[in-house]
Length: 98
Image (tube, rainbow, N blue to C red):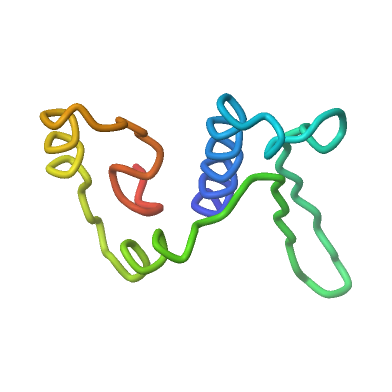
């Protein structure tokens, strides 16, 4: 459950970050209300977790899905040395937090 909430938080952070330079992607009013909702259905014995963030692109999936504890440290340092965009979101693994 913690992992799913953490992933939802990352998705909200990602759209918030994109919204800084592309406000139309974030939207306005209720659409821009970044939230995470957890709903319990006792009858179905389920929990539903819904976020208003943005997911991974196809390139993100290809690069990261199925990767266990991949560290983005070397990629980050390489980008820093080249003076590239230092977007930290998702640079240090996919969903492995302690």
